[in-house]
Each structure stands twice: as structure tokens, then as C-alpha cells.
Length: 121
Image (cartoon, rainbow, N blue to C red; front, side, top):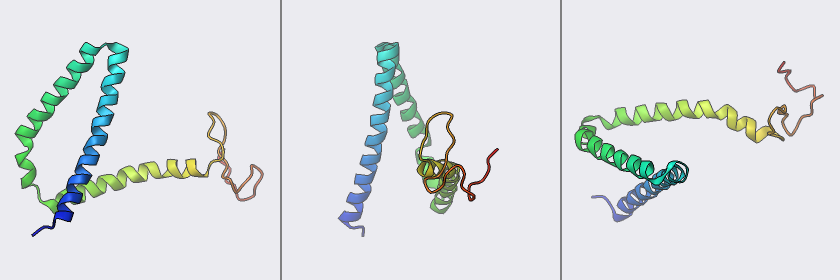
């Protein structure tokens, strides 16, 4: 039997993650509403909700047929691939002392004349 703490933490995590997504979608609808008008913004939001409901109604029961191990493996591979793609950028931004457009990035511990700095030219 599953404890109430495990159920509560799973429900809380799902609620918080869906509230973040709802906040993002509300921001997009507001941006479109203020820039293009409210009719296309609300119409697009309504069509998106209908499309989501149709997808869940048609494909929701098929998700139970996918083995959980395969699903976890596929999601893990995707997370690793996206993480490896973003890792060099995040390492560079944390090591750079100035991130202005057109300037060269030198780590905080080196100077342009440092013998340990690689020549990127």
C-alpha cells in the first residue's frame, strides 16, 4: 500500500509543474493579446485546449501499454542529450567575466596574455 506522503508528494510535484506550464501559457496569451488583439489570442488558446483534449482522449489510454522501463530510458536519453547540448554554454557563461556582445570571453582566473589560455583564432 502506498503511503499518503508518497501520494501527496507526487500530487504536489504534478500540481507545481503544471502551474508553471499554465503560467507560461498565460504569458504567451497575454503577449499575443496585447500585440495582436484578444480575439486571435483567445481563439488560439481555445483551439489549443481542444487539440489537447482530443489528443488525451485518443492517445491517453495507449500510454499504459508502453513499458515503464522503456519510457524511462527514452526520457533519460533525451535529458542527457539536451543537457550535453547546454553544458558548454552554461560552463562558458559561468566562467566568463564579461558577456557583452562582440567581446571575447576570458575566464576570471586568466588574462588575455595568460600562457594557459588557448588561442581561439
